[in-house]
Image (cartoon, rainbow, N blue to C red; front, side, top):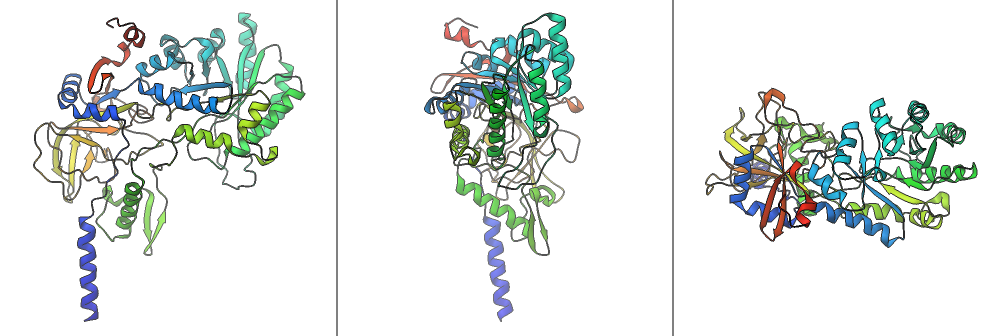
Length: 504
């Protein structure tokens, strides 16, 4: 009798879990919502320009830039926000940003040429990343700030100055390998920057070559979530800055890089609930939520949950600019508990930051046609999109939010057990998302699916024409009045012409 009752309870739990349809609603700019509500425009663009299609909202970057600049203003800080351009190749975003006071961080010769063509003058550009001689030479000739990464770049810049007779090259020196301080973390190797242990030799070189360089200061960069590493890095760079001043150099800035958070999920409870359902599916207490039970980093061992998620946190209580503010307001033990912003302000040291992901927050979406709905070999509901994993791919982020479905006709097939989105490649692992989502209805042939907030490291960071499939076009969308949009091919967008009321 006890066994029967227990079996009954387990059956009830199983039925209950099978009815659970966890959602992760994407946080979405109101203008993006108004665009997706305009079915006629959505399908006109997607049908006319092809699938997949990246829809860029260039004016949205004005809002994110302004919020970061407010952090400076509220703390009486001088310096510059450098828009890191590598997360997205959009020309319209660069052209729009060029009309502000923001700088631009480029990481290749091609990006530098594009930056100049987009309206950024050399005074506002910094060159980062590994540099071949062509990239380094163009940067030096144009008077770009060069973020020096190693002694070879030092030596090549000196040689270029001798050959061209140019003025001093403006430089920052990137450091890496900082001590953890009181908070211990596992050391990770890196390929960018000098080891902080080599800082004395770097300073010696700068002193020896004072006539070749306009040394602006030190720089470092961490990815999102590296909060424990930042205070010790800031302390080390400030201490080295003061050592440089003592040695007769004139550094005037500290570049603390990027890595500021983005909120992808609209609701914390929804996000937490989905993660709990994911864990439950790995433990076997509900139907699987992942393709081939991958677990997205979680696994079951001896009945226990092990592992860690292989996706970023999608809900944060702070936005990117608030993340920066918290870093600047954090007390530094090596400086008697004074905050970073206080030390910078009191010593008239400029602050440079390099937000990329956070500046293109809510600046683009990716649209795709639905090719068909079908069942997998094991009976899972698949939605085959006219795009592939290279069109929406990142080595840093698996997009876990639910895409928005725009139905061409009134839908009829309920999506009771959820769906998985797969791509158009002749590959068994061409998954657009490796987890199950739960729309109200199964998308059908000809419908549109929109992935939200894909500008950063998603829409074209890894895109290829593999198997001769399409590379997505970009279209820039401008909302002239609520719900009224004008569109332009991305590279033909001209914000100055729009401001002058001249037809581009």
